[in-house]
Image 1 (spheres, one colour):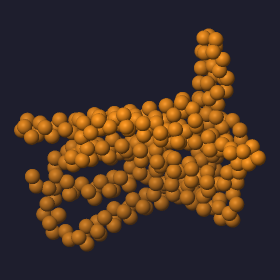
Image 2 (cartoon, one colour):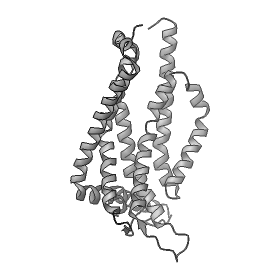
Image 3 (cartoon, helix red, strand yellow):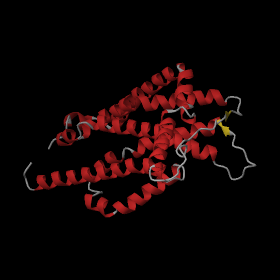
Image 4 (spheres, one colour):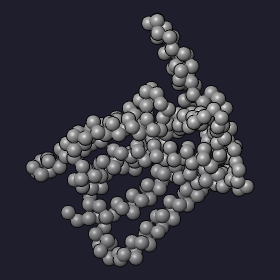
Length: 287
């Protein structure tokens, strides 16, 4: 089967491809910078309502967990089981953030602007990369890849929101309140807080790309549904260990983080099985 734009592909040299890639990258970077400027201009709202919100008791997740704990306490009371209604309340104590560098706040402002600019521009950045790769694909590969931008961007954004609304407040509560000794007070540095928040959010966004990664690995034959099913138990153990590391030491928090990751793994198995079924039908000449 001929590739799309085959004549153009043959005539283009390696330097021509680099030139095309350069323009795609420039447009992607420009989109990130423009959105970063917009974020920079709305610094008051960005920092007060988004960046520092997860450490406050009034944050949506913190309130929902506290209310869930109160309801659970009432429910267990009917069974004569006494549980504190504040069991699931997190970030109730004020967490003070300090800056000890002269340019610390300004550099943090720039850093957050670029980070949020990248997150907001992710669909466009991926679209530019897809436009560069697409001409090298077979017509059938392009057909099977329809919706790649939508699903990849959607999963990334879902991971970012999951990391921000669930993992971040749990992590802040655990690390911010953890003490090796009552004589040691926690004074959280601004850079440390921002690093923790950004790494958690971006890591969650990347982890949620698991089905996309498995899709491409299955397409080239490196991963099979049988392999994923065989190591399902091992994967669940790894997921639970990961959940235990990034959440407070209670089962409820670990399940909140672990269940979505297990669901993503199961979705990856179904995707792989579907790809293998299509490949089998093509080999039999039925498609």
